[in-house]
Length: 202
Image (cartoon, helix red, strand yellow):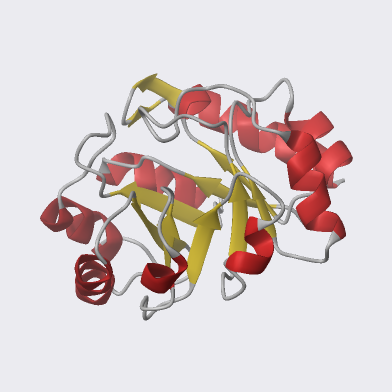
């Protein structure tokens, strides 16, 4: 069964709506240059409003392991997502399960301790959330190696069924296509997306 991760959450009402629809993961972006950046205290209020059925993910870009570990501990995060070009030494210092954004199949063996491997559209300015399709062929290679895969990048209600059919990801990660503006979700778009996912599962 394909799980769903909604990223770039900044509002309590958006988080609760996604949880009501049974999103499996919610992502909170702690990269200060992101349009969807959220302060730790604000994220804490949102996370405290959730039940334990929704996993929380803190997203970081080229951050120090000490900073990541402190935020992860303070918020009791289930996962951290390392979305930059973090050295493996940094990744190995992370004290909670981590998701690693990768750009080549060779990196699967480099970041061998990752819980999930994430494939997103390559973008070193915004580091994700730009609505462009990722490399599905790379994603498929990761899946074929028997690794846990998160597919991100340009997914929407019109291409999600094809993505699930072709790539068979463990998790699909959606952000920009479900927004009114960066960081503010469109509940109607979220409902449409979940309905399409439901059809893909049936």
